[in-house]
Length: 268
Image 1 (cartoon, rainbow, N blue to C red):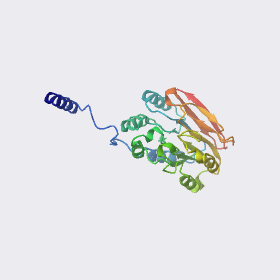
Image 2 (cartoon, rainbow, N blue to C red):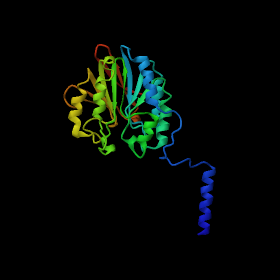
Image 3 (cartoon, helix red, strand yellow):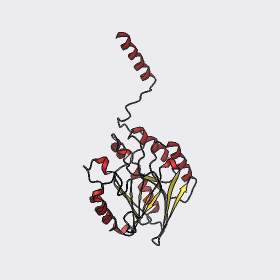
Image 4 (cartoon, rainbow, N blue to C red):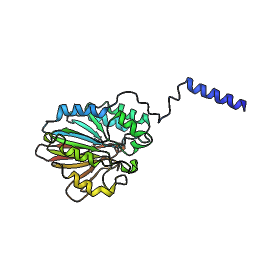
């Protein structure tokens, strides 16, 4: 027994002296930049609020695919026609603190502003807390090109249906918030209605509510790991889904002043 204890002491001392174990991966210590979304929303709105035509890229589900995320950043930085990037969530795989920080540091190399939504994998362990500190609120909005982007937490299953997900109070508030500053609306979410993560008891009500917004252009989602384009409720409102970053694709949208838009799947 004494020999075993001595061996354990030696191993533990060696690990500590070599800094091989920094801290528990879920302990929540965040280093580096925080409040990413708020800062980048300020940049977007200062530059593009009144811009007649805006062009943005949509990605999602970058969890574990760091090299591919790096390639995406390089691809965007090689262009000069993209105003900002929207990440549809699942920036982490297991809710590990380091996962959020690694992805943040990669995305911070973008030459354009970006925002990140909460994904269901981001909710694991204490991931919600890490997301909140690094990126910000789980429901938020911003305006670019007189188009309001309403970004929602729709991961109801991860909240055990104990929180309002989606938050109809937030949606109702956004209807009149800054109403003189926008003419068009785009809803962004990680999981779309009829997903296993969505609270499908309210799917139809959700659709009815978002259609009340001025000139609803379309909805965006991630989560499904493949490119999709569906008139989900057969009411003319398109839901566009982006592939995971491992497939090396992103969605590119151009919102025009004549109330039309262009949609493209870009391989990189």
